[in-house]
Length: 86
Image (cartoon, rainbow, N blue to C red; front, side, top):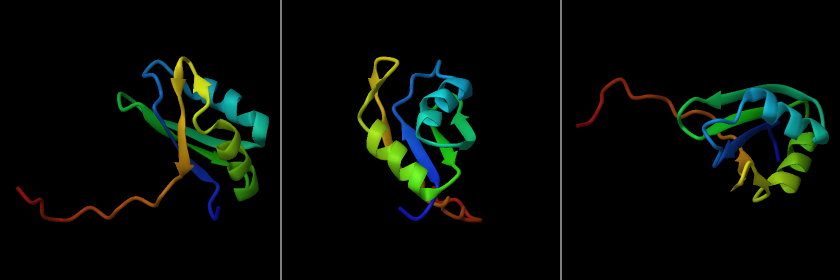
C-alpha cells in the first residue's frame, strides 16, 4: 500500500467521526476522519502506510454497527470536467 488514506464504505448513516476514530486507533495513529454525510462512506487517514495496511487487513469485511465494512486504499479524486455531458 502506497498511501495512508483509506476509503471506508458501507457505513450506517448514523456513524460518527468519533466512532471511526476509535475503531481505527487500535491500528495506529488516526490523522483525520471525514465521513461524507448522507452517502454511507468516508475516509480515514492514518499516520503511515503500514498502519493503514494493518487497519485495512484487520477491518475489511468486519462487522461494524451491524454492517460489513468495505475498506480499500483511497484513490485520488478524479478531475472534474469543465463541461458536463448531458
